Length: 227
Image (cartoon, rainbow, N blue to C red; front, side, top):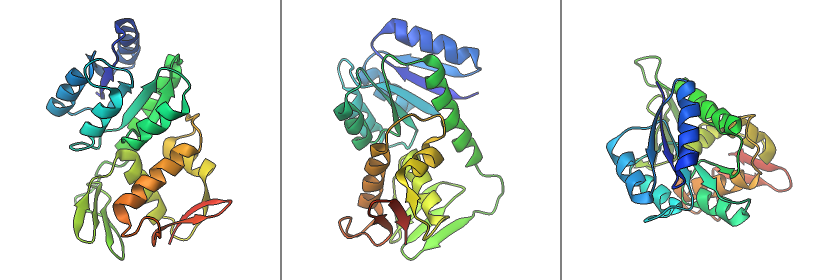
């Protein structure tokens, strides 16, 4: 049974989301401020966290940033308005995706299910670990662990998916729209800047010089490719 944490200070919204997700067989916990959300995220293992930006005690972006210090759980940030800065800031602090209020509960459920499908498909199915190795990067695809220059690095769920996808398609150029569909799912209605932010964050983690990347390269006017 998938375990979901819903964080919002508007109790009616939380109640509606909780009821709808439970109808689909999910186990749902609720938190109504940032401190409570952070405590629950530390104490329990969740499959997805739905996290509002505007929260009492601790803002959603700060909660997300602190969660990223100890967990790669997928985080969907909820913004109160269609504000580009809210979206970008959420991604900058480690969110995997975002959705704007007011949202259709069916869209939210579609995004959650898309995340659950990807994480389920990535779970180990054999005892022998499979590896992806390229120069200084070593990826254990079954444990979803990444080592760069023999040091383990902490990637978010989306960052990991993006890296593994690139390493399985070395040399092929992908438009940002295609990466958005491939990594975030056909249900995603976000914009391509989501891809740009994740590529930049991934470069900062795997490249010795992010401004002069040796792995994730830009094909100007087209998209990105892994060299």
